Image (cartoon, rainbow, N blue to C red; front, side):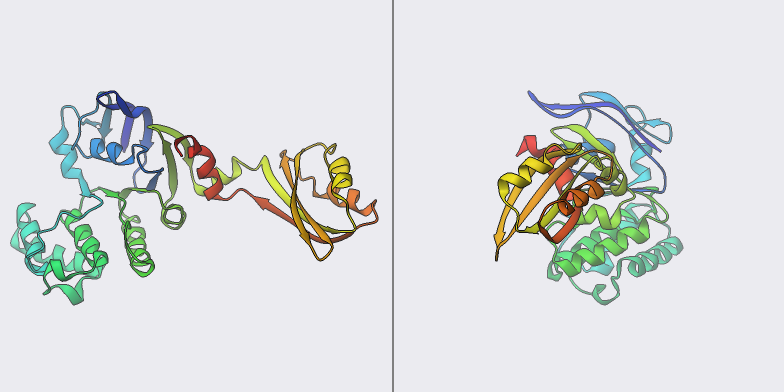
Amino acid sequence: MIELSELTKYYGELCALDHINLTIEKGKILGLLGPNGAGKTTALRIITGYLSPTSGTVTAKGLSIDTDVLEIKRMIGYLPEEAPLYRDMLVYDYLHYVADIRGLGPERKDVRIHELVDICGLEEIMHRSIHELSKGFKQRVGLAHAMMDDPEILVLDEPTSGLDPNQIAEIRNIIKQIGRQKTVILSTHILSEVEASCDRVVIINEGRIVADGSTEELRRSSEAEYSLNISLEGAEDEVVDKIFTPIEGVAEVQRLGTDNGSRSFRLLCRTTDDIRGKIYQTIKQQDWTLLEFKQESKSLEKIFRELTKESE
């Protein structure tokens, strides 16, 4: 539905986006994940027509952002990180005002506002002034604004930034509900957000895409690297190093410490094979007592940190 081809953006000599290629499918929730300054907001602003790229193209349903920007904007609802609301207005008046600007007729306007009030959970605040609302409710009003004319594409820039855990859960549920019917693109640096909400994750770092797939696919791509944590009684550090290091697939033996006579180790493994059996048989051949044996795969947080660590 949306195609980014060789998308590049410079601010002076700073390269914010570096030849990005990305296809976003209809009816999916895509999370654009990256550290602050990675280029997420720049990409969203170009997609929505607020910025022009230095080079490259963006198309939506075959329309080009270069020649058909107004048509593309009509397809998109956009909520920036700070919802652009008229804070002295009542929520009721504000939504009617937005509906008028969007050109909704009287009958359609009332029906659509009623739908959005239900979707965004605005019933209890309709006759309150916007400046009195919590940030969570302001974000909900901003969502209603972005969806007023029922756009096919919804673009959300850091939609849960600054919210408390309850507000995050509420906004997340709204996004998942919206995502059943629309294409949703959201940017965030919160890992739990993409795990809970997104069908697909694109990790961007220093203006470049460094990973693309579902959270499960990203984990599977790192299955060749995992760790085995073991706790042994009666083992000596030097002997543990000597007998485990030669095992094919064991890249490193790390000493984690001692506790009441037991010693803990982490075996860093780089192999697609399951070598737990070899490790266990090796332990059996020694005069040791095995107290703990646990495999740890890479978490999404660790994958993210490894892919973006150059910017830290």
